Image 1: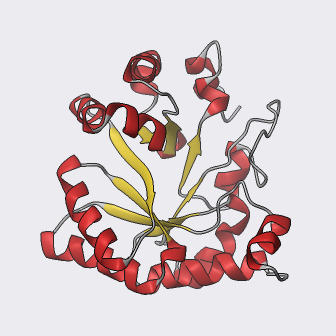
Image 2 (image 1 turned 135 degrees about the vertical axis):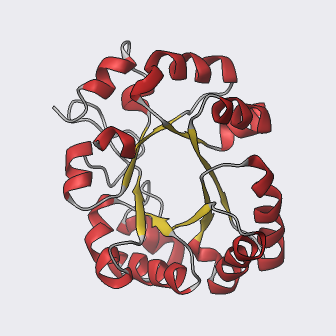
Length: 228
C-alpha cells in the first residue's frame, strides 16, 4: 500500500501536539519524522514513545560536521532505535563513509540517508552560495553518487531528481522526497514541490508530508484522500 511509504512530519514544538496527531491518524500512518524542533524540545522521550507504539521513526537531524564528530554522533544515535537518520551529503565522502562504518561495526539495521540539496533552495539560491552558475541536476547527482559510494542507503532529494538518482545509483538506492504539497495548498517556503501522486510516479520510495496534514482540521481525512 502507498500509505506505508508515507512519512508524516511531526513538526511540532511539544510532544502533546505531536502525539495528538499520532492518535488521530491511528493505524492510517506507521512512519513519522522527528526533526530538530521536536527533538530539541522533547529529546529521546518522543522517540521512545513512538517506538513503544510500534511506529517507525525517521530522525531528521541532518548531521554535518567533521568525520570524527559525525561518526560519534551516529554511534550515539544507535541507542535511539530509530529506523532512518539523516546527514548532509555536503559533509563529503569521508564523513559519510565513517558514518557507514559505525553501522557495519555495530551490525545495526539503521538506514542512513544523505540530504542532497534542500527543497527550499532553487538555482538562484545556489548561485548566491557558490558565487557562480551551478547545474542543479549535476550537483544533486554528484552528491547522490558520493553517498552511494560511501555505502549509505539512500538520499533525501526532490522528486524531480529521483529518475536521475536512480539511473546513477540503482533502483534499490532509497530516495525519500520532502517538499510534498497537495494541489490546493500554497507552497510556502518550499521551492521544488510535487503532489503525492507525482512523487511516486517519478519513482520516490517514500514521501514526507507535513503541513498539508498537520495543519488540517481533519488530518485523517487528508491522509485517506491523499491519492484520490
